[in-house]
Amino acid sequence: MKNVFIVAAVIVFSFCSTAYAQVGNAAPSGSASYDATTAQPIQLTLADALQRGLKHNLALLLGDQQSRAADAQRRLAESRLQPNVTGAVSESVEQVNLAALGLSPSSFPGIPSIVGPFSVFDGRARLSQSLFDWSSIETVQAARLDQRSAKLSYEDAREQVVQVVTSLYLQAAAGKSRVDTSEAQLETAKSLYTQAVSLRNSGVAAGIDVLRAQVQMQTQQQRVLSATNDLEKEKIALARAIGLPGDQQFLVADPISYSDMDRPNFRDAFNSALNNRADYRQAKAAVAAAQAGKRAAQAQRLPTIHFDADYGTLGNRPGSSHGTFTTAASLQVPIFDGGRIRAETEQSDALLRQREGLLTNLSSRIEEEIRVALLDLNNAAAQVQVAQSSVELAAQQLKQAQDRFRSGVANTIEVVQAQETVASANESYIGSVFAYNLAKTSLARATGVAEKDLASWLRAGR
Image 1 (tube, helix red, strand yellow):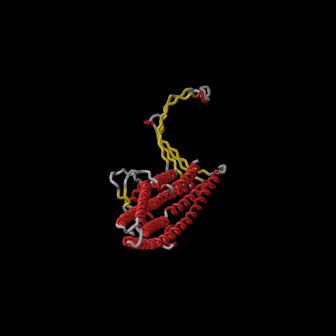
Image 2 (image 1 turned 60 degrees about the horizontal axis):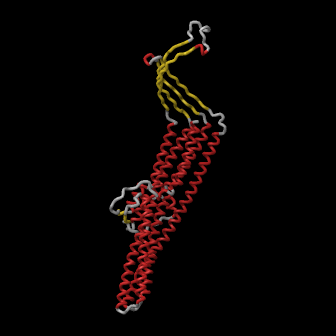
Image 3 (image 1 turned 90 degrees about the vertical axis):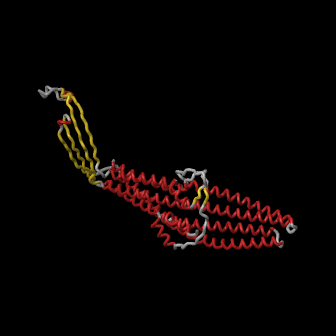
């Protein structure tokens, strides 16, 4: 029964670990604890956001408890190979009717039919020790590998948290840039409207120019409102991921920035991922644990050797007792188990095949993630270069249109079109920079260096 329990426990724990891994993928967007609200708004930097996320995020709190459960499972498996010592003290008073046991006085002259009352005192320590049980040894190895797998799963959860928090922060920073740009464009639209009114009063511009300028100004006001609303929603998502209360006011302190980086080739990035990614190492540890679990199931066919001993004092009273002991060694050989060992072996083999398939699939997925991240990085870098040039050209176009309108050689149509070009160019630049930094984040996660290197990759542009 002991071996059945051990193998079953390893298999159940293995399935629980797999279930946790599936749930954990969705966890980094939420928090399980929150900081206290402060009256003053917080200047939230990316480093501060990451620190808070790694402290409060739900995925890490779940992962920590999973590691504790795996450690307890390992200690439980190891305890079955350790000596088991118990102590007991008992004292009893008895009176026996020998006639009821078939010992009548007529059969044994001189012996009374009622014996006692008499007392028996027994103080004893008992030792039980497994001398050889290969199935339990393999079970301990499987439990240790499952514990390592759980710890690596926790490390992978940290990588996921860094990726999610960084992505949310970049999104909020991009939203703040959109608000700032929209507000600057609103000021430009207000200046155009004021200028159009002045020129109309001077008889230089027509009334239609004033209407166009007013419409453009109101359009920019709507853009400011929309961008501000989007930013607030992005900040809510960020706050939830890092454990900030919903009513805590904070400002995104680090502006979105662009800095090119040395892009690794695919082979170097893939090798880095296999060495650094905790989820890949966790999957390998899970395969090794399943292999040990299968060996543990198969080893139940081997003989086991067990040792039992006890020592204590036995007598009528504690003061009149005498030391007694018993030692025994037993060899148990399984002969027929009704197919139980075969069934457990097949069950362990099925788990092993599942984990091997997951490991192979994970390797393929890592390759895909790296290729996609590198493609996105190259594409976003090219888009940033084009967007930078577009912003400069749009600014020159707007300035020339304003000068022409001020000189009376053009109407507000040309200025409004130039303003729309500036707005489009700025949006393209913000979007391309965000996409570039997001590609950096994806590449760091794909290669397993998000927690170690991502912050420095993003700070390079500041």
